[in-house]
Amino acid sequence: MATALTPPRRVAIVGAALSDIGRVDDKTAFHLCQQGTSRALADAGLTKDDVQGFMSHGTGMLPPVEVAEYMGIRPTWVDSTGVGGSTWEFMVEHAYAAIAMGLVDVVVLTYGSTTRADLKRKRRTANLSFGGRGPVQFDAPFGHTLIAKYALTTMRHMHEFGTTIEQLAEIAVSARHNASLNPEAYYRDPITIDDVLTSRMMAEPLTKLHCCIRSDGGGAIVLASEDRARDCAKAPVWVLGTGEAVSHTTMSEWPDFTESPCVRSGQQAFDRTGVTVDDIDVCELYDAFTSMVLFTLEGLGFCKKGEGGPFVEDGKLRVGGALPTNTDGGGLSHCHPGMRGMFLLVEAARQLRRECGARQVADAELACVNGTGGWFTSASTIILGRD
Image (cartoon, rainbow, N blue to C red):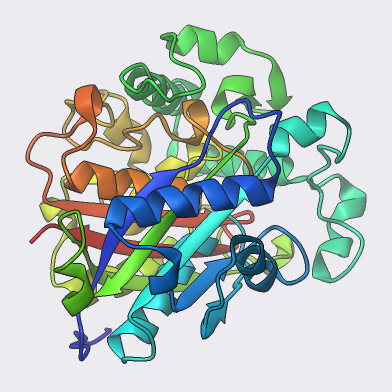
């Protein structure tokens, strides 16, 4: 069991903002990084001259250097960790350690992607097989695209535990309900379980509405040491505990098709924080597919393994429910430009600062954020709290 951490300095999110999101045809990924960073710094009451650490990924060969140069920032500490959609949660742990140990005082994490616009203009393809080089080349000839890998895991969970497709569909319906309360969400019209089940089949048993949307967008968060946080414009959102874990890239090396590595990252984060799942008021969980949410809820301990289906079917994931989850509408309805982990952190910070309007979770004090990368390849869990 992990031991409680007592870092020399506490660390907080002091700024959080999104760039333009949804349909963005007139900007590049660099534009979106600049937008999100400028807005997050303004949110914190800071300027780019305050930035000492800089973290980015997804824009080229040298992400933090290229993006920092684009914005006229000259950091003394950088990180470009790349582990898929959970990248931003991993980065929080790394920035937390650097700030806590006194290497830097202020760190920016930024992200921008024009996935939708690039596909529309044929600048990239939608092939998600990740084949060609490395271990994944051995899966690629068998048609193991990313969605096929998730379909396999979904079918396995249904076979082992009796999870139904209707229960999984409720996760999409709940996400859309939450999106209906969010004016920034890409899709806001209500959907039903039948709508999910009868939408176009993508990879059995996952239909289109079981899968995340494709959009453009980005965002940024600013982390700072306690002494700097107290002087910022907004109330600090404290990083109380973190955890990270990796699993596999080759499907044959995954011991259990129904277990996310969040089992380990979550245990670390909760142990280091000293709280339990019963203390959590709001969850922001990566939701590239409905089954990803179900696996994550089980892995983090919100319900027992195999009981995720009955756990979600009563609508408890909706704003106003027992466990509001993906309160902005998630990747299923709000925004998903490729790596959604950044959006989880921004929404969690906004919830704890009571800034979310109609979708605000009443009296939210503690938030659990969990990013998942690849095909349950990586996971990182962050516990955030108010003063």
